[in-house]
Length: 565
Ligand SMILES: Nc1ncnc2c1ncn2[C@@H]1O[C@H](COP(=O)(O)OP(=O)(O)O)[C@@H](O)[C@H]1O
Ligand SMILES: [Mg+2]
Image 1 (cartoon, rainbow, N blue to C red):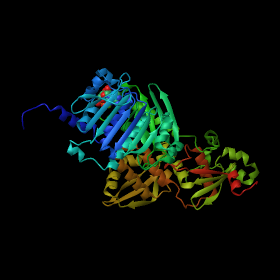
Image 2 (image 1 turned 45 degrees about the vertical axis):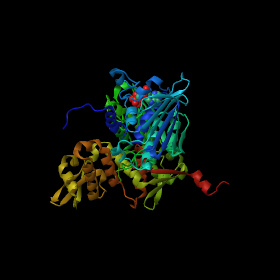
Image 3 (image 1 turned 60 degrees about the vertical axis):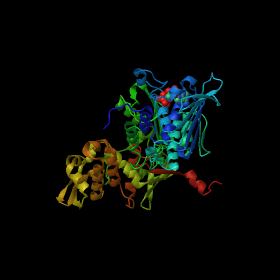
Image 4 (image 1 turned 120 degrees about the horizontal axis):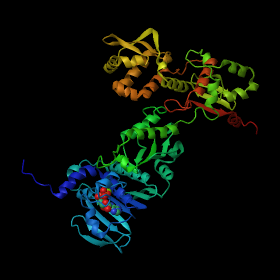
């Protein structure tokens, strides 16, 4: 080891650049944030080769004074905060004063700027630090060429131009979403990719996430003391298998935050299969003093002071939008609950059937008006392919996906309380050969399993035996159900996370407990299912986000057959 020396400034900036300028897209992000902070209303971006050859950002914002051009490229020089107090309340996107210096340290950077009171612009040469007169309109233009030309180690980590471009485009979309009042253009290799007019938030969201999303989304707007959320989120049917279209902003800053994604996931988990991802663009506004954005140089992480309250707020705002009244269009849950008669629980799988109404309905079809109102899903007329229940109500034909509907009902029942987990001992215990993880999970979580209505123990070193399952699921294949539950529990790890992810586990159980396709039902059983659907919250959607029933009005059938023409 040599003697201790202070590092040269350029080297310090190059080291810092490792954090701030991870790839071209991170440089683009910093430049765009500076343009937004400058109050620009028009921003244009030119990229070459995914930003590896060139990133140019031109804005019409406040500009930088000729005498401060040098400072703008100096490390820890910023116009945005001056004291610790201001740091704690920072409202601008930038504040660390190190982006331009870092980018300049690893690229050939050219900065041109013109303030409103200047006759012409000024350009600074980042190597000599000299300023020269330059042409150009009001505002600032930053050109970053040949990124990492002087840091070969970094350059090696650059991916293909198309990959780097994809990252840049993502950054561009995030910034564009966060500032709908600003008009943006993006060109790549001379070709226009995006052209966005200034717009409302809703308009910008549908520009960026697409028309399909716009159609499938619901708008969100909630306010409570010191907190507000706005934006749009897709209904479950639109869900995708990737996390691509998930945008969360806090005070205009795109963030990836565990707490917030957890709140979103929790709101969706009842209506979405857990391998699917919801699409959303959400904007949370909060007192700047309530958060700490200075956690990481890239500022995509954030800390909340009142994390619980924020979690609850986001969760409830989304849940509200996701829980429309059950069984639309003509359904009134209150009325159905009155009609529901628990005394008449006679069907094997635990659903009620007000049989007198049903019988009257079948006897006197001309009196169909009244019961149709009382029972919006009508009365069964048969089963199609062992999959669908066909029913008749006041409006016409109702088609029900039997498995999906029953799954929803079982799930809601499981959720509703512990008494649902009464054990049902099996006449013939089921055995299976577990994987090592299944075995370990079973033997390590005995208390939890019995709380949930399972009796699973080891029969031999290589065999597990299931002696009881929850009574509510008594029709299920016991071994398959037990394995699914063990797999989920093993995946979640530890009983604490099982508590947190209880609903996911219940969804798995419901899926196994629900009546299988191809099982033949009697009319009475079908009607019982319809009544139960009416009485169940959110029965219009199964746990995997699929619809559970469909109305085919008589008028549509008439049209099909060209009646009345
Ligand atoms: N596009 C721009 N328009 C106006 N001023 C800018 C622009 N880009 C940078 N600046 C000025 O240069 C300073 C340094 O920028 P930067 O290194 O990104 O640090 P920070 O944004 O954290 O302050 C900013 O504080 C700002 O005063
Ligand atoms: Mg900045």
